[in-house]
Image (cartoon, rainbow, N blue to C red):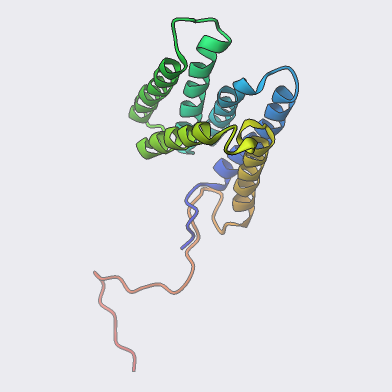
Length: 187
């Protein structure tokens, strides 16, 4: 059975949105915005891809956490809220993302709690190792590449997966006899 359980339409929407988002991010970050806007812009790109995939299309957790973290980064640095330290901003932003994710999940959106935690965890490690340890993490190109590759993979899965337009995975391989049905022995 195919491992891809997302409908082709969802994959195409997500893939297109991520590829477009890679281009928009590159234009903004290599253009008028400073690199400090990266978490916020990446979050908006992922939210756009999540919206393109619909309620059940996923990516909501990633988009919410990155957007929340981005707002937390921007509060003291770009929005002039001096009472908010960097740590305060990060906690407020990611906490708001977790709350928003919980509310969306209650409304039937595919927001996975593990996805919220994993995104925050990985973003924290990226922040920890950015700069002196791994210079590439403070450059825009890896994030452009990540968005583009993720978008391309979604499109590739949409066009290569053996699934119907409705998203039901095609059955492959021999059928196993049902445990509730009698089968006749073969001789």
